[in-house]
Image (cartoon, rainbow, N blue to C red):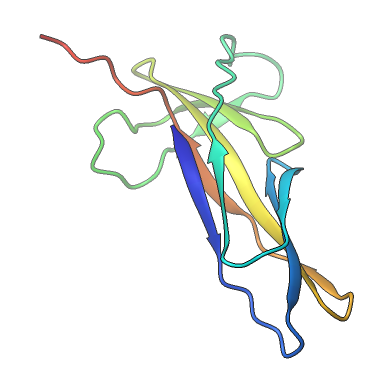
Length: 124
């Protein structure tokens, strides 16, 4: 599975490159438009959420009945491991980009929070 990241930067002089980051780690830099990259999702599958630093997680608005409150363990890089009250495991990731223009200036985007989980097993 993957997440496609699309960036629409603009600058009077032009864009020289866009760097893409997941959880504070830049994983690729693109020097040609369109400024789109894909991130191949690799689940960390943290087993033990209940440890020092774990906190309550309220969930988010969703039509998915598995999205419900639980416990979250957040790491310094922005990654978070979440286990809901029903035992469903989610991971939270923060995506951001850094855009460089032809004059040598750079600007970093705000972070976007995404949540991923393993595809539910199909039952017969």
